[in-house]
Image (cartoon, rainbow, N blue to C red):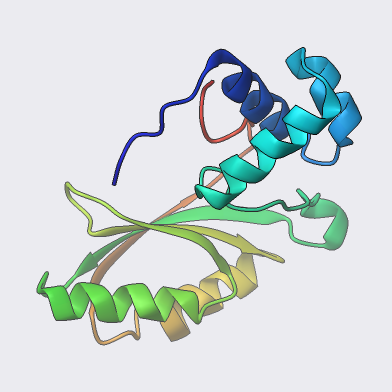
Length: 155
C-alpha cells in the first residue's frame, strides 16, 4: 500500500466531499478554489486511485426505528489465520454488524452493531454471536449517546 501524494487542492476537495458528498461539481470547485473542469478531473482521478472509495447517504437510525447502538469486543478461541478469516467472513453475514475491525489487545475483533432495540441485540449476541464456533468471549458495551460525528479522516 502506498501513501498518495496529494496537493493542497486535492486535500480541500477531499475535505469538502467528506463533509458533503452531494454537492455539485461547480460548488465543489468554488470551495476548492479552482474551475469546474479541472475539479471534475481531480475527483475522477481520486476515485480511480481508490482514495475516494464511494458515496453514501448517512441515515438517521432512530428515525428509522433503530434505537440501539452497541459495540462488541470479541475474543476468539484460537487466533490462527483460518479462524480469523472465518470469523471475519461471518461478520459479513450479520446485518446488525455495521462495521467490524480486527484489533490487537484483549480482544480480536471490535464490532459496531445497530439494532431496533435491546431485545433484538440480546437475541443476536446469544443466538448468533456467542453461538459462532470461533468465539470464546464477548463483551458488550451499550452506547448512551453519540457525542462526536465527523468524517473518518482528518484533513
